[in-house]
Image (cartoon, rainbow, N blue to C red; front, side):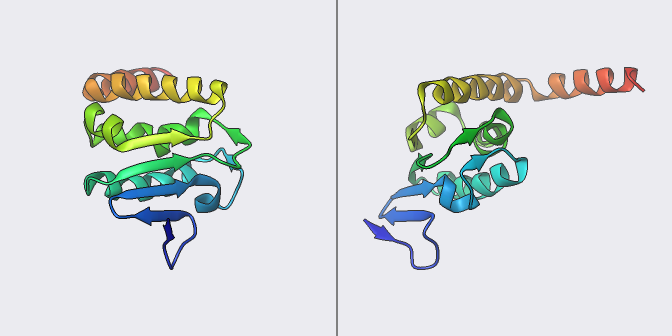
Length: 130
């Protein structure tokens, strides 16, 4: 497998790309929205280009839903579930973290299927608290 010359976090082989999350964000802790956005920024153009992507969580010691919502969940706002499932593969997650990812994906699918209603409800709720 070739390693791209400018970054070690993305290894490419023709239409297959492996993203090593810990290398990409420079940390074993997947806890911030900013780091999640870095991952999304790598994933979105690869999925758009039809690449097969392996997302490796090797060496990650802590993973929270906020990170996954931004990194992976928001892909459901741009791509179909079939495209995402067909092009992305995740490796290196514990069974607990796989369950967390499943919940994030389920919530993202519900949200993006009815985004306007969720956003309106959020605005109404947020407005009532002021």
